[in-house]
Length: 205
Image (cartoon, rainbow, N blue to C red; front, side, top):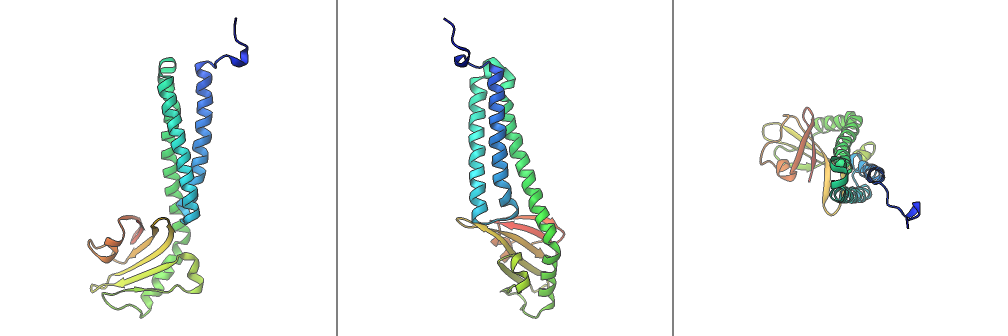
């Protein structure tokens, strides 16, 4: 006796379409959850990003399981959901970098004005790292500024713009020489440094 149509198992290609749609939804939600942390780092966007990463791991697990269980019937087609996961990961990474760069370029004139104010001031003592208070109009740029003019006259300014948990900080570093001296205070302070513009680096720990 044949089963009613509703109880009959879906054909392999039907299962593939269902899996692909599920992976697209999961990866789309994951990307949407992770992107806010790229341009604005705080505890809430980090939590949202962690939830998004959990969604990506779920999609990856499902796609691996699907590729294994359907490998005989679908052959190479069985890895389509897995390829979608990898593509989503690459796209999210690229979009995150673009969002961070766009945020930096949008604020760059104000970052530059802050550096010029520090250069023009008399608060720096050669060879000493000092904390620089932000003016009222600069408060939205970040939450902490350190500056140093070394004995060679090189000015370095650190601007902290983001944070998270348990101990996560990020921001930008300006160096008038265009490089960060190996072994210096700022070099040892930041394990991750990426040049985003001439004399400017994105920093994080």
